[in-house]
Length: 465
Image (cartoon, rainbow, N blue to C red):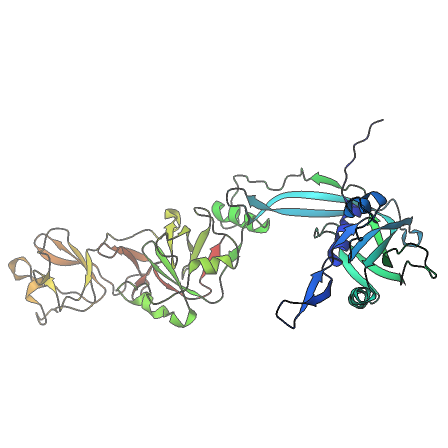
């Protein structure tokens, strides 16, 4: 019956590790030209003892050539079953492995989960590997130099690792120095003058493993149905499911703050955050002197996936404004924010043309001429019932004055100005947009504040990769 076979180079890998251990020894070989510095020669190491054919080739088929030296050769001298290390031959170790998603385009691993496998590792077979290292030298001084380096390295053993695969439970081993033979020569010597060889014998307790069984998980990992969560939100339910399965991460990096203006978001250091600026009518200014790069922040946690990664901005009422982000191609200090319209607060009032101080500016006094439907949000009181403090610019047809308070919204109707939103006593939760700056404001019963644009201190926003 034919059986499949997989050659895994297990013994050969230990030999390669032994070669690397012995490949960087040097000897002094005279002096450097015009210098007192010793000339160092790296001693080559080869597998296998020098056979007659190999030696003949090295000597160029001539008896007048000297054997090549210095040289180190090693070979397997024994391979025995190590019965004292034998364990249950029928034991099977099962290990669950989950891969990270690999992007073949960028040749990098992403932060999301890829395929899942179960690896069944069968009990390996214990063996004791014997290796003999021959040191070929042309004089005693060379031999002493090499032995002095090697005998201090093995004191009396040295740990090695055949692979860097964390699933391989047999990769670690140790090389023990067992014995040293000073010379291969005998006294008295015969007519020939053989090259002097010192031999060192090592032993390695190794494992020879049968192939592991790798099974790809075929179970259902995720079920997405048209079911809402406890808060009646389908989108959050799906996202939280992703977080549970480890395919998404939610991070609030350090204690950094955010500045949100229109579709740009800048990440700033905590000491630069001024939350009170959200109550100002003027839009916040992106900090041109801040050098904090979004690429540096995101790389600490994973990879930004354009159109998938999100920023979540927590609002005072507990809701969140959610949008996808992408690094600004022109300046990596900013990300471009594309908010989900379903998560944005909806305007409850018609937009205003501008936010103004009625005591400083008015129609044809810094503003356009009054036309039907023009709307302004006021920052100061103007006029009263006694016809005092009524700027002339706001007087309408038939001398009708404008009597309004700070935070009121006025509109030009039928050739005169009238208050269409009176802030005093108005309930919170009213939203209006300033057409000039595209900033949306919320009336919280005490004053106007930016609805979602503005400054977010650390802990009031999160990054979803």
